[in-house]
Image (cartoon, rainbow, N blue to C red; front, top):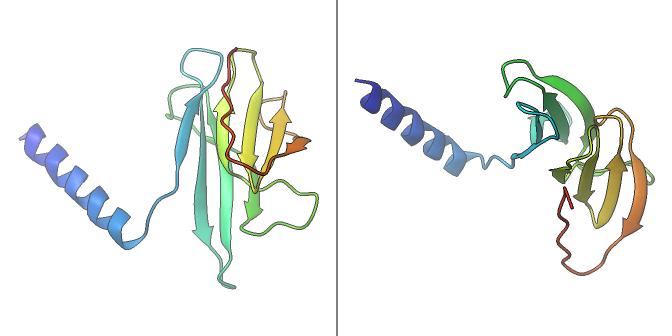
Length: 126
């Protein structure tokens, strides 16, 4: 019975994902059970997509909103993209809109670091 329920849930997820693609990413933090989730969150009444970064210290049992922005943020404001955790407690990196941003306080505040033009890969924990 469990296998049937899991199969049905997976089929529903893939069907919904085909209708409205989900752009979510999960990365782990420095502590056991710590995760960060970056995702498109909701569509407002003006047709703007809102993106968010969430944080959990218990593998997703409880989730806290850390940062939110619209799809095309004003100049100087960070756009949520790919989030990478680090082995340093509280360190988190975000690269989106061809920019790299860093937070050292678990995503509470963000500091701009650099622009990049070409495809660049970043790794955390090194």
